[in-house]
Length: 368
Ligand code: UDP
Image (cartoon, rainbow, N blue to C red; front, side, top):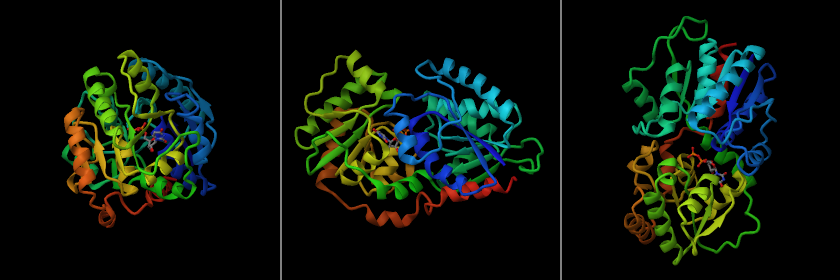
């Protein structure tokens, strides 16, 4: 069996880590990796291939740093050529980026069945590029590998599973399975290799923060609100913030000065795992980091108006605060004063049993 995996952005390298390891255990599957180039800086891409032990990409498309339309279109054109040459049985895509959508559309139009890891997630905000990418990718996929029960419910509410053409694999309808979250597999597997970041002065107690979502970076008022709050918090406790290249650019564009926050370059996954494990609290607008805070038992303040990971909000370990300075500071104080441990919630198995990668590969093998 031949699988073409299309990836291109940081969270996808992390999600692919344990799945590719699992694929490699099966000598009868050949994985061909296509890296679209959506993220291309070495600390946003190469380092993850090294740290996660991902096979070197077979194809590098070099399509990065462009508008959504230009990137998606150029990726599709190149992926189509590769699929015609490689003739895979399956195209495997992860998450919700332009690379995900380009891989899914190129494959579906050539009638190659698509496997979507992280299917069914919804923010219900169609202004988010990620939401558009997810919905369209789900619609054309054969395997919908959901990370949570909520994701399965979202699909059912939208009328999934849909009829797709008759094939020996599908029995005509899309296959929806809750396999659990591959990011949990990654967190648990790679934590044994966690590495303290070098060249950063780290205090005993610190807060970890990441900001990169377009809804925050592309809106000066929101980015200002968030950074002013972090500046205030940093007067009391160190705030370490590995800065995404897009956020770095926009901070400069808006002339936003930060004196108190410890801004560092993006770190590798092993350093990120160390920071998560050793932090007191996480403030983020990242999808992945919200869950990782939970996996490492840290409370999380989410700098967005909605989240796809609603389970965490329901059990109270994640607070949605948007980008309002006062609300962020108030919630930080509440969490600080009321540090209820979140240990007990692990038994809820919200994200499965950390065998998502295994389940995905064994489902795909049924098609061979
Ligand atoms: N991450 C990392 N280094 C960093 C910041 C984030 O390794 O400097 C990891 C993080 O632990 C998570 C993933 O990148 O696994 C999340 O990616 P991102 O926040 O870019 O995307 P999202 O999850 O919001 O799609």
